[in-house]
Image (cartoon, rainbow, N blue to C red):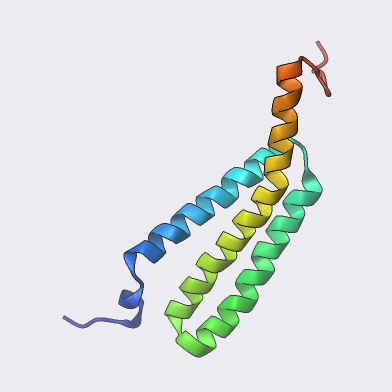
Length: 108
């Protein structure tokens, strides 16, 4: 049986990629719910640019394995960036709910 270059990607790397992509999209959904468009745009832009640059150099140096690793790294960094925007908004909203303050009431 013949093995190709993509078989060199370890399973923990695949799991890390899946988790970081899921965490990134979860944070994006939270920011969307909070109507934080600028932080969403910044974290999405950083993900796209990091993925493009890192994949380019990863492809030149390591081939298809480098592209996959660069994608995992880009999503992990973008997930941390979106978390940095999302966590303070979550804490503020939680403190508001506990104190009974409604910052943006829903019209009825």
